[in-house]
Image (cartoon, rainbow over all chains, first blue to last red; front, side):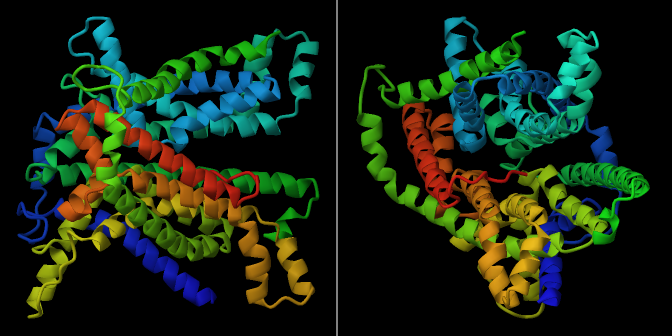
Length: 278
Length: 269
């Protein structure tokens, strides 16, 4: 059974990575057709850096992702703190609202925001309302639940006495937050921010309904591209991004492993027998 | 000290950008595209789209079930390996989720096309090319491929948190490995299964890109129809009515699925 599972898992991972391999190989193909190998070249990479279109679009995506994930992190962390202080009934209502963008199909979220922005544009007499601002608002909106849902559990795990202790020792509530609470919930804040950032960077469906010609992100442009024959330099961009993300993940992995080792050693000092179990 | 008020900006934000927009969808669904007067005409036209709704639902259900059948053994295997290997596998599952799903889907198109990589290979062997794309199977393949990580993640989270002592207890009480799985492991992973099914079903039932690229005119899904109402045909009122029905359908399905987990907390990634 174990062997079957192992073989099966390997097959599934091959399935998951076939498209990456196809795109990476295509990025070194001298021909334009992805299915016909015409010889090895670095030409697509050269074309990518000479071409003045794709990289600025990637920059647009990064700008939106950075600003929206930061804004969502601040707003979401504040909200998580507030939600914990709410009465059970109010908390239920708030969490139900938080879950709307999570359970609603993305296309419905996109459509509803598009209708809202069109309506606001009419009211405020703005001609081309869709653009940077609408894109940013939409991204902040779908990023918020990710932050809240990863900060809330950390707040729940925190010892409620910590805040009281800090305030007994003379901290104002604000100081108590920045000196004590924020350190306790930091892992939740960071994972929420990272999740928001990746969601925002790769979002296509919602962006597609609220973008304007003045500010386009990379996924939207790729979609518009795929209606025409695709330019091979886009494979080069994909391969480079893949390498960057792979590197970042491996680094995070190593850091985590180091952290865990330190933790396990610290536990060993206190004589707990947790180690033997793993 | 009112910490509650810290949530006020968030609540205002969500009110304006989540609740109000949904209200506007309802309003558009019940008004005429030309005159702006109240009408049930948009919703009355839903009957014409019934086959498309059924098709979307059907393909999304098949994809969710396949994802579960494929994802469970994988999550089970990963959860049983050493911590360092778990981290490695976790990374391998996460990584595809970070890459452009448009380009990855396009890579499948180039594999499966009539003049694609697989069929070129088959032809070089002197065989007849296979009809691998522009059919229901290809759309299901695209859905399973894109959303499989969303199934593996919550299953893995649930399996890793499971108390080994429960399994040992079942073994001590005389269960065979099959019985342990059927009576302990599987029932305890229900929250992960529900959460995984939801996370695959919702994007699958509302997709428009996958069906556009992998399917044909026969596999038009409800997402395609909504997209075209806003981007091509420009009838936002009909589009809003379709969105409203889609939303109601999804909420109903999610509510039915959540009933199976008996109010237990549904696992998230």
